[in-house]
Length: 291
Image 1 (cartoon, rainbow, N blue to C red):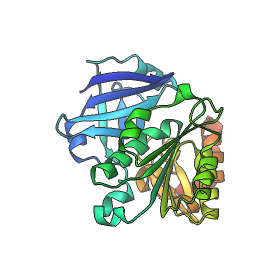
Image 2: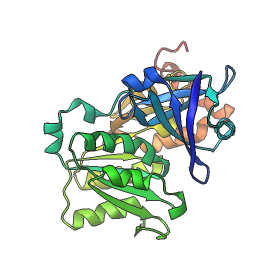
Image 3: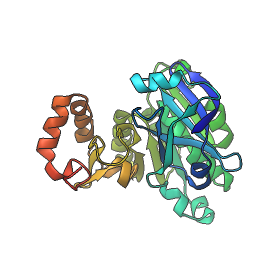
């Protein structure tokens, strides 16, 4: 059992939990995720790792209450436990493969949208601990929905807050802030964007115009987390990939976002899932055709 040692409501329907999971905390890296289950019959929920403390043996997760199972998770309190807490899963961020000396030569921009601030934070923190300063844009619909601002401010080189309604920070979409920063003379060697699919799509369209290589995390489309359900099947550079086993990070300029978003809509219904399976054949479930 995996005990919850801290629970915090960050904003409306968005919660943070620190969970005792020593083996996960010992080996996890920024960019990876875990799968949690409340009980033996519970739904598998993939969640990106927001933070970890190797000494305490805790892993931090952030989730939004959007469905029945995440609504049930809200009922858990400090001292309660998860039945399963499996990880680390997925490939770590590409940044962890580079030395601090190499990273210090790069001008790095992170773009986080909504709950995407949670998976962005551990990467920025990891860089900060190695003396690498990265610019960070955090976008939210309103000020009330903004999360992890103080935590991000403590580790970012420069933090830019933007709200769709202009209620806090800069006004407008994250793409406008990218344009503004470039117009002000900022140059970037790489952009890492994490957030809603539609946000990542338009960030990538812009950064392609600006000739900024861009990495995206497709954790928003994961369901089962093993490649068997077919939910996170995506086409990248013309090849079939699965966000949970091949990613979750991919070259954003090579991702077919329109196809992925259409699949998300179809996958929500039983009839839609059946149609996808018929259309995609052996490539629907991790490529084996037998799952």
